[in-house]
Image 1 (cartoon, rainbow, N blue to C red):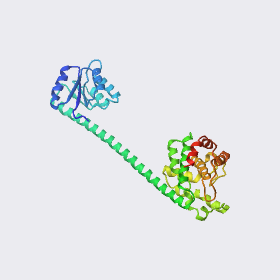
Image 2: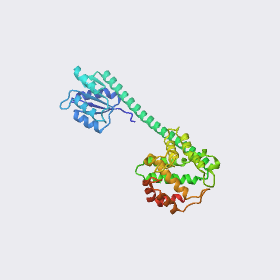
Image 3: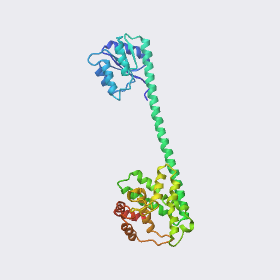
Image 4: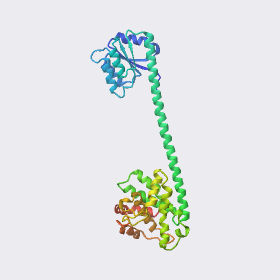
Length: 348
């Protein structure tokens, strides 16, 4: 910020300008002067001033009219204006104050009065500018602090999720690579889906690893049974969706809300034959529909304790055959259109 004060003196009588400058020069101010309202506006738009001493009674464009034009310009409207007048016309002075003038001084000038009032309004204006800069600086600091805190919270949430995934891996036959591949395929499908935003892509990528978090609550003998589950065992296995919902529904965080949707709905089917609620079509949240495809495709192409890995063609045929029954037909089309990219993820 500059340290000197710049003052514009506007008066159609040169002698008045000279008198004012002679009185004020003791403070070593920087001066510019104009002999008309038009000339004053030209100087104001091209320079930077801390105060304007503006004569009211001028030909063509008088002081009031000049001030009105200043008030319409965002760059000029905050510059303090002190009117100079030989008039004691109360109506004119009242109009000046209504427009936003900070003061008025009558001519002929009293040196002590002019010096005191000019000094007061310059210091007030400079203090206002310093306060504005401090507020801007404080707002910037607050924004940066908020970003940092939010980032730290997000990182903390992700660490918690990663820890939970390690626990899920330890109690099931799914590997860490499975949840990472599901996350990558889900993000790809979300990116290619016109209905979803960049934020959706990021949310589904971060939240999809929690799709089977409810398996923490499934008995070990059912979760690790090498053969086919009985109907009773399968009904217990299905509860991993609702058990996950009970845990995740308590949060208002976007990422955990997304995880709740995915963990609860990734076994729903497009035709309504899935679980836990038998949702149909677009009743199933798109996050759940996307992860349903990614989860099944990855599970088919990798070995589990109860089955061998399928080859890529068999797995894609399985998804294609269930288009419009188990899986969202539009998402299946997106998957098939991006098959090469998906295959590269499956090989990771």
